[in-house]
Amino acid sequence: MGLQQARQSTPENMVSRLVIHYRFTLIILGLLLWLIPATAADWPQFLGVNRNGSTSGESLVPAFPGSEPEIIWSHELGSGFAGPVVSGDQVFIFHRKANQAVLESLSTQNGKVKWTFKYVTDYKDDFGFDNGPRAVPLVHDKKIYLMGAEGFAHCIDSLTGKCIWSVNLHKQLESTKGFFGRACSPLIVRDNLILQVGGKQAGIVGLNTTTGTLKWKATDHEAGYASPITATIGGQEIAICFTRHGLVCLNPTSGEVLIENAHRSTMQASVNAASPVMVSPNRVFLSACYGVGAAVWQLSPVDKSLNPIWETNQKLDCHYATPVNFEGHLIGFHGRQETGTELRCIDALNGKIKWQSGRMAAGSVTLAGKTLVILTERGELILAKASNKSFEPAARGQILGADTRAMPAISNGRLFARDKRKLVCVKLKP
Image: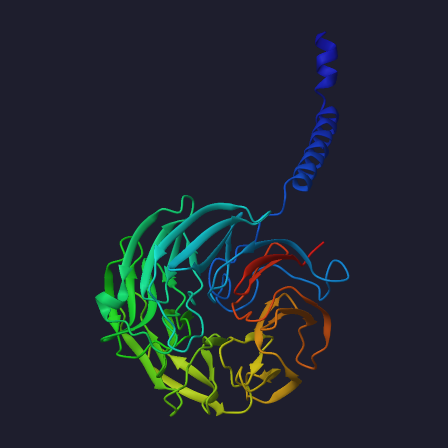
């Protein structure tokens, strides 16, 4: 027995056993990876994880898995223009039925309701446009933050649907209704919940994410309809806002205004609605219709200064949808929704038009890898290869009805999109 054990313990036998064990381990790991479903890529806030209308690590091909888009499931909704957000196996949708604002948590797989949170809303659109919420919710650290059209901000537990805190910003800060109610999608920087509320000496505010208490307030700007973004320039993190009056860059922790610059129409009946877009580490793009046009500014928050790179109109005048940045080019809708739009691509360095689609219905643009995912107001879904040379739609199909204005979400090969009657889940990958 001793001789046999000695033979089994030779260096050659030990190496052989290690090789066999290593190969067996690789096989087991491979099987586990094959059996475990891919982790969903979250779309936790307005314009996605990076707040720029682009997916994070998820590429799509410009073609449907079948001959036309396949709707996996649909869910009945009330009014509103607040788009869906996705976190893990939950998709959250904010809408209105009768006099109640409704937040629902649905299964991403089958659309079944997990929980529902409701509160009474008295918002009434003065133009008879839509009485539902406008602002896309934000999912952060197992909580959901809401901004209602009537002026209520809420923090909700994402697992149970229970309310953690609620603040009446209309009452507390005299947040103004504007033309179409409050529409700012929340932004979180550390423990600061940043909202453009248009309050009295509180155009932009920072709330404590845990309690909802006011931490700081800045500017006397009316709110407008754009939502803020963040950027880090020269080692300093800033919040970049596009209010009704123009550009505001501030310290997200203290609310100190670092840069301010007017960018608005002289028309009273006008809005700033498309969010800022970073086109390089220190350059921001802003755009609006009503004769305002587009501009790119170079920001220096350390010096509290900005340098105009170019300003022009009739190149990419964005009414409400935020364009995407593709390889130094901006692709988005040009023109007012009610008078006619077209999709355009411009060079971010100089504003030069690289291509234009010709007349098409207004809508939104999302970038998934090198594929443009376009959803028009008429409910048509269009896929096209992202390019700075030309626009060539590769696939198109009807997924929703008219009044499709909410921004969609893309997660784990699926598109989540809504109109004023339903939310649909569409297969984008086989």
